[in-house]
Image (cartoon, rainbow, N blue to C red):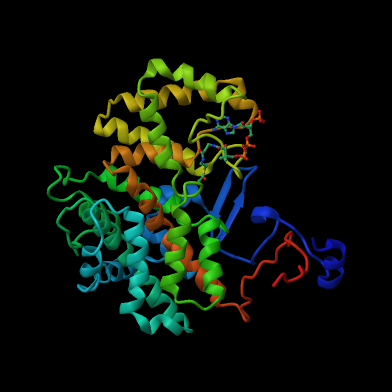
Length: 397
Ligand code: ACO
C-alpha cells in the first residue's frame, strides 16, 4: 500500500472528504441555505415569498436572469415557453422504440440527451444570448418530453401542448387528458403543482446539480449535462424520497397500524425509518415543508379528499410532532412528506414523482451551468483519491 505520508509530501495540501460534506466545489450567487435557521433563498429572495406571491415562471426567470421579471418580461417569457414547448416530430420515433412500462425517468433522460441531436448548434455556445436560448428551449420542452414519457410508458396516445394554457396547467393537461377522466383542472391543483416546481427549483450543490456542473466543466453539450442531472436525480437517495413516502403509507395501510410503525421507527434494533421525516441540512424545520403543508391542507379540503392514506399520514404527523423521540432529534416532516401527498391528490402516478422534481429543478441546473460558464477560467472537476490498492507488483509472466 502506498505510504500516505510520502504521498502528502508530493502533492501538498490534500484532504479526504467522503461525500464532500465539508468541501465547497464552487463560488455561487444563486441559492443560499441556512439549515439551522430553516432558511432558503434564491438570488436573495426568501423561498416563502417566491412560493406564495410569485409563480414558477417568475422563479425560473429570476434564477436565469438574476432579477425578478417585470410584467412585460414575464408575459414575453410565458409566450416564449409556450412557443418552444413543442418537440421535433422526429423525436416520436425515439419514444416509439421504448418498451411499454419503460420508466419515465429513463425515457426523459434519453429524450433530453437526444435534443442535442436536433439542436447541435448548442455544442459550443459561448454568448449570454445563446445561453438564454438554450435555457428557454430546454425549460419549455422538458414538460412535454416528461408528459410524452408518461403517456408512452402507459401505451396512451400522446397529447400535444396547448398554446392557450400556462406552463404548469399545460403539463397537467398533457398528463391527464384523454382517456383519463380528470381533464378538468382546478385553480388549486395548478397552484399546488406550480408551488412544488418553485420549491424544487434549486438547492445549491446537491448531487444532481454537482453532476450538471461536473459535465459543464468538461465542456460537454448542455443537453448532455442536464441529462446527467436527471440520471443523478433518479437515485432513491435523491429524487425518489417522496415516492417512498407514499409507498410506506400504502404499506402501513390503515390508521390502526400506525402505532406499531411509530414504535418500530423508535426501536434502535429495527432499521425501519419513517419516510418523509428528518433532513440532513434543515435541523429545525424544512421551510419548503411549511409551505407545502398549508397547500396540502387546502387541496384536501377543496377536493374533498377523505382517503385512508390521508388519515394514516395525519395520524403519523400528529404523533411525531408531539413525541419526545422525534422532538429531541429534530425530526420534522420534510418536503417529501407533503409533496408525495400532494402529487397523489393530483392523481400523478408514483413513477412520475421524480419527473416532477426534474421539471422544477431544470431552471436551477441551467442557472448553475451558466454561472459556471461565465467564470473567467473553468477548471475541470477532477477530485483526487486515496489509493489503497497494491504497490508496484512484480510481473509473474
Ligand atoms: N425515522 C426514525 N428515526 C430517524 C429518522 C426517521 N425518519 N431519521 C433520523 N432518525 C434518527 C436516527 O435513528 C438517529 O437516532 P439516534 O441519534 O438515536 O441514533 C437520529 O435520528 C439522527 O439520524 P441521522 O441518520 O444521523 O440523521 P441524518 O441527518 O444523517 O439523516 C435523513 C437525515 C437521511 C433525511 C434521515 O432523517 C432519514 O433517513 N429520513 C427518512 C428518509 C427521508 O425522508 N429522506 C428524504 C430527505 S429530504 C430530501 O432529501 C429532499
